[in-house]
Length: 594
Ligand code: ADP
Image (cartoon, rainbow, N blue to C red; front, top):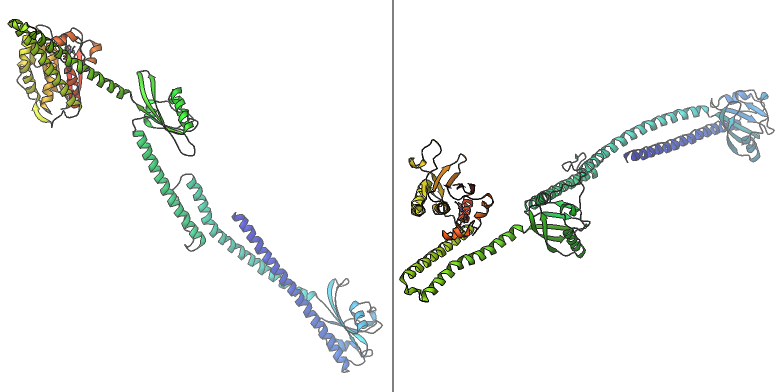
């Protein structure tokens, strides 16, 4: 662009200088001719004057040389008679000169009696000559003056050279000034162009220098450019912020989310979508169809339907996954933008459905568990009313059964309440410091009688390993913990109760606790009982689950004891582990952060 400007500028400057030169030269030309005419007419008129005053005498007889030598040294004077004969002539002898009547200016002067100029190229002298002829009525001759234009022309060409030199200098000055000013203007523009290209490529921090004053157009343009770049940078930063925030929000979502275009190509997936439907896009980074991630024609059809109708829709999708059936709620919202498309959000309902099932199972179980002792109680009351009360021994036996059933009912309600308290989050009281070993001793004392009745030995301490004396002989050691002592006590009693219940005659139960190197407390309850089969290990923590329902019922179990243990452990960021093989006794190890 600037090259073109420069060429135009040079062309204009050249044209101006050339025109100026032509005008000057032609002015010079006319000046030279005018000067020549004046000199010629002055010389001729002088002769005419001299002749009229008789100074020239009879021209025809006088010594013409004298008459004519007083003329301008450049001017040649010639006196011509009517018949064209040269009467007198400066310089050459008139006798040798040809008839002059053929010269146009002379012929015209004789013909009209006036004065004439003529400019001709002299083929003999090879120069331009200027002629002047004037008719003098008395004595009826023509006075002609002539001079070469050469010298004047030499002067003229000298002047022309000077003019050209000046013009050339002027041109160079113009050129330099033009180049400078174009550079001055073009530099910021070029810089602006480069900055704009760089900004377009993402270098939003680029600015142009303020090369010209603030008041110039370019200066203002630079300022406006920088202001625009500022705004652009701020807007882009703002957009990027928003986009990062949006990505962070979407990635923090626990639900897989896809954005698809109208062709169902995935244009965005959040982190959860990548985790749950983890197929990587093509190597060239291009988008893939949603069906390649979510392999369901049913879902695909549904998204198409929403796109067609343009109305938000939801569906339930049962995904046959490796680990079982997953139930998803698929919510599809059409996008209003130019490209259309939709947002597809998957909400995993599997866990919720499972919890719901557990809840309703629990309700059914509770009803069943409560109604069993109640039915028994009512049955025995009816029997007593029906006459059995008359038999004191039978009455006493029935009343005892009623008491046992009522006690079972009581325990059941207690356990249900405890569980719902723990689950409802009201379980943990402000933790207090207490000695866990002292709690263990208390538990042992509490259940000693029950154990004795079953012929089970209850020991506070670990079983004696080979070569080591039994821990029961050790000095009492404190194990300080911070927790809710009632909950820990309850857990302990539940575990000890089971260890006694599911033990064999003459069996043993050991209970002890220790703080591990990781700072966590491990509570061990080990028995010599019937043991737990591998496949039962996870199930026995379920509510109301019993391996042997008859034995549990017989021993007065509620089926909730281990559920409570698990929940208390969870309350203290812990877990329960079982080491057992069927028939070889079991060891429950509860790890607690207390
Ligand atoms: P229950 O009231 O029936 O004891 P729990 O929840 O305490 O209910 O225990 C669930 C089931 O786990 C029991 O019915 C029993 O089959 C099994 N179980 C619990 N503790 C032991 C143990 N120490 N040895 C063998 N089986 C056990």
